[in-house]
Length: 194
Image (cartoon, rainbow, N blue to C red; front, top):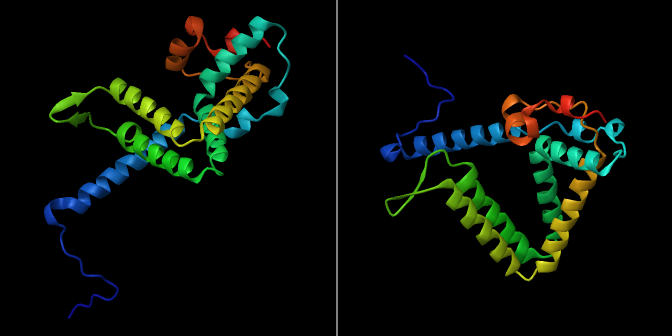
């Protein structure tokens, strides 16, 4: 006689619906992890020993370009966080912002198969353009225009100031990143002598 203490009887889901949902959730987790893997460690971003005034305008511009290429996901998170904080006192705008973030996740970031609408394949660039326009229009329609514009401007200023002050001599990009984002395709440490 066998016992089955502690087991919970289960039935098979109709047509594999649950297994499909679990696969989608698993793929979504993997894509989020892969996307966040490009984020640089925060302790490197906030290394105060690496802050120094640039020696010239061209040095500042070079630092800004290099730091934005290196810390792009960190900077995007900072701007989104500042925008989120600015919308805390505008509950309708905050709800719209959260709904739009969910739409971005499902329609753009977490999608691993091409988007097909009415039998037509939709290019990722079109999804990006439509979602960007939709985001801007819907947020501006929530009567929080001033909050949104000020938050984005504050985020841009914070990023530009940090990028101009942060030395780049200890940052190294991967070969693909360096070839596409930094002029000349060299490692960051070799392009700057701050």
